[in-house]
Length: 351
Image 1 (cartoon, rainbow, N blue to C red):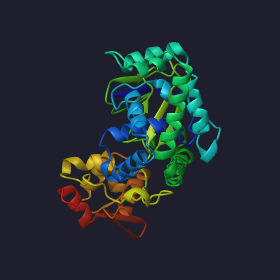
Image 2: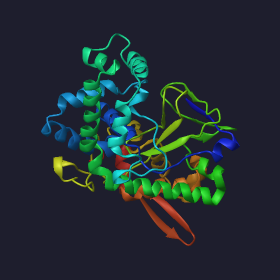
Image 3: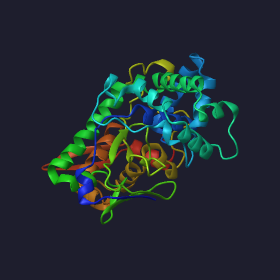
């Protein structure tokens, strides 16, 4: 479980730039290449990116980056240096990938050694030891490798991921205008729930994030799935990266989505049973789909699933755009109904 203590004063210091961070997107996308999470949304992306990696001759380089940033309970914090809040870089990302990669390459040697020792507890290979020692050539290689991977796996999708982030920020801003900071906090439900003076949420390990008067920077990422992510070392400037769901056809709509044979459904990633639906469309949308065995209004969805009406409406909209739900306005209310495709997905034989 993740626990973040948030006082009323902490809320006034919350930083929400609404922009992606290039190194967080880079590392989290490396994780997605190592797992099968969110297969329906990301298998087409995986196919395209793997094809580009082979074509660019970067298979060994990306494999090395994946070893540095394993999909595990711990990966080095230095790979995701503190975002530069409020400054727009090239392509609209915070600081830009060039500046972010240089910040990684400028990590102090003591920190490199400490964090890589934790990543390779049984001993690091020679090339990792050179990075841990801060050797200039090794750090230049690392910065260049991160940039080249980002250019292949993240940058081509910037137009559609920015659209998803803009929609997310609009929803957060609306919650803030409507109900103040409490409304903004509530807009993260069910990823993070208000529990007295704290946020709590699912996390693969027990992790607390004490703020100690420091501002919390909240960063959205399309490449973050299932649960928010924080730095392992709570002595570092606190950052919370949270998932933003892309549009169902985001890969096909990418800047070069036609390359690499991407499609709307992931090969081998379609649901093979109701228990897998949460891995395909996310746990909250899976719950929305399940309770729509009976037609429900937005208000009813919110009440049944303990969501805010705005959150329930947003999830129903994404499911509708994916063809899994229909929505019909009746007077001043909207009635949502699961489609036959939604039925098939839950039954485990969507094709």
